[in-house]
Length: 444
Figure 1 (cartoon, rainbow, N blue to C red):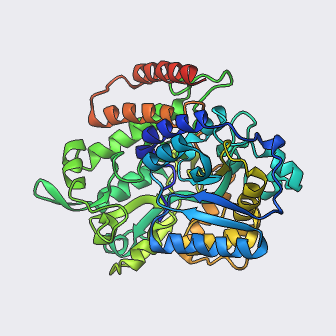
Figure 2: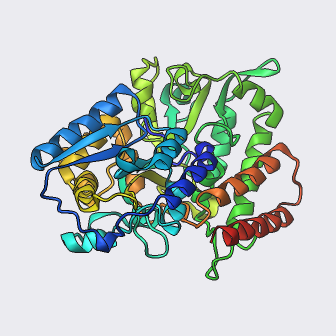
């Protein structure tokens, strides 16, 4: 199951990255001199832990080792930030050579601190034209200021997963395309029960799993930073419009306190007790994995998928969405960077490897060739997310030197808005801009 871009883990991960920075005493990308044709053992760390995920990693590694018989890969999964810290403090042979991370939000920090090696020299040396291999948006979130310190390793697209049976019962024939339609449909699907609910059309609060401010803001095509590099939350009307629209939806579905009480009865996001599976919510803002997880949970209703609605004045852009993904890089402290590059290149650019991994864990492929591969397993539900990933106006949150801290700052402000604690949104966004600029200046 994917855990990409988890802001709940970002603050902790940033501490781990600072340790990476202090451990970067090995080769530096273009200066890597190890012989990748010699016998070598690489340490590869990743965060996946579910049996299907780890099995998929092991199968890809087995294919890699068959193609590179001189390179053995020691795989360590389910890596927590604490374990990363401990191993990097210890250094030596136990430290990682290659790392796969869920946290795209920290790419700016990885690159700015030189924790990961710049992969541009490796790409050039291998004759890999990254613009022809990877979608533009994915390249944007895997580099910072020209330093391509990571590459995409699968992709997540966010859209709408909905209960088609509940839609039919409410007389709704099609998924909503605009925000006004979205609000109307969410109200129709909501069934109050005393001071709670039997079902809500949507859990619109920002704590509702993947319903983050960043996922919603993407539908307004916002610019987080201006040409001068300064935070532009107050300068771009998109943010105030999104915050206002979400707060209006919260109020129309019963208000923040009532919704949050109901949300606190929900099961774990990654379990069979997810509220979409149990029928407690009829629409879920989620990634490409949710439909397959719902089927595996044995839900008794028909499932539909669609792009997230767009603002009414951007109806022509329907189909876009927020993109994120897993990333892979080479630790700057590694003395086996050329060999590690062979692994990174294989896992991120080899079409067979990318497609096999995407099929196994139900993620969107991260290369242009893999997106079009006839070997890619595409269900009707999954195709929606492939289309979102291909949409020219799909977007992501930009990399910055403070990692994902600026997103956490924006998210904290959004929490205050939905609770009704903030009444002057423009003034609050201006204050948030100042805080973000201060944090980034310190990080740089």
